[in-house]
Image (cartoon, rainbow, N blue to C red; front, side, top):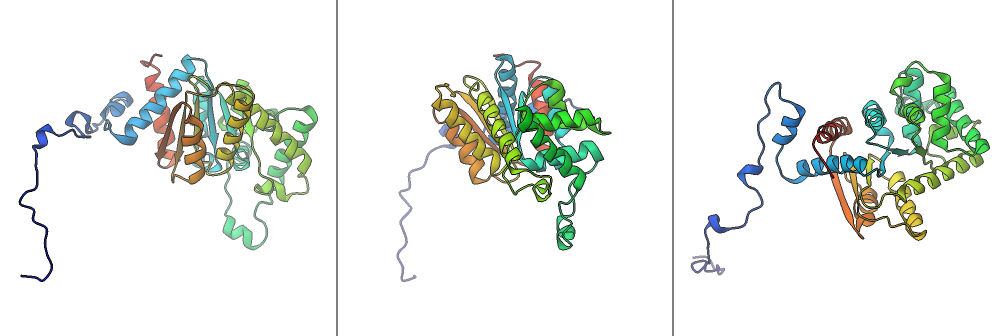
Length: 319
């Protein structure tokens, strides 16, 4: 016998598993997918557990927001555009599900380059070495000119970029989210941190114009946020810092002015759940009422899945 005492387990109290409350039941587990099944069948076959259910709830919230004529704000970072999701977002806007886009500067730059040239996302490491990183003159010319015109015309920054893209009639304009918003006459607001975007490296950049235009877009976004209450939706797609911070301030402004921004839905979709989206999008804004979701995954997979669910639930979901 060893020298250390052991607990006596002979009097352990037990019970039957048949009487125990449990979190997972057989009617909640997955149905194996089959070749040729519909999107609806695929969604219905997902496990009725954890994030699969959350994805469905977010999709249903978007559908209900449209039925209630409430805003659905989609905030995004540059990686969403780089992974090829702009046409999906534009389609949902065209169908009336997404009513306001808001992004950092990089998302607008990638969208602009894809619309004009059919490619984007340079090799940073290689071009940084010789000092050519970010020095695309034609990209900077349009974006910086948009800031100047937005200041002069007292219009939004994103509005000006979209207008210039449409006027230019680029060869790939049909896949540009900024152009789509311009044509649909819905806001795309552009929220810029000075010094973070490649266009700020160019002599055409004017700080007063960029600041004036971006601040106007802050006020435009705050106006939309003020109407979120009782059924609106905010989706943050891949912005780890800028958009969660901007969104939190617009909430403060709207509530300070007496708007009852409560009882709405928020969701953060990203490959990693960062601090600011978690607290500034999913948690803090809905503390007085509402629901926040965190869904982790690659944009090129999760955004098409969300879009498919929105289109499917639009056929049956009712307020």
